[in-house]
Image (cartoon, rainbow, N blue to C red; front, side, top):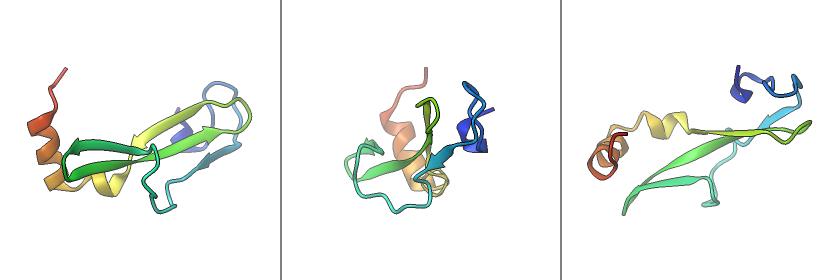
Length: 77
């Protein structure tokens, strides 16, 4: 279970909120892939216990040009 599903796995609360439908404004919620390529995060927060999770924005994650830059610059673990 993840916050992305609307229920907190830590406390069981459904007081989960997200910025996933808000246009990114260049806040901390970006992952720089290369000089001109980045992915935005969607953040999910439980307002009952404070747990939060971040996921790459689905639209950015589907962008093949961004993925190519990612593969060139980052190392597989």
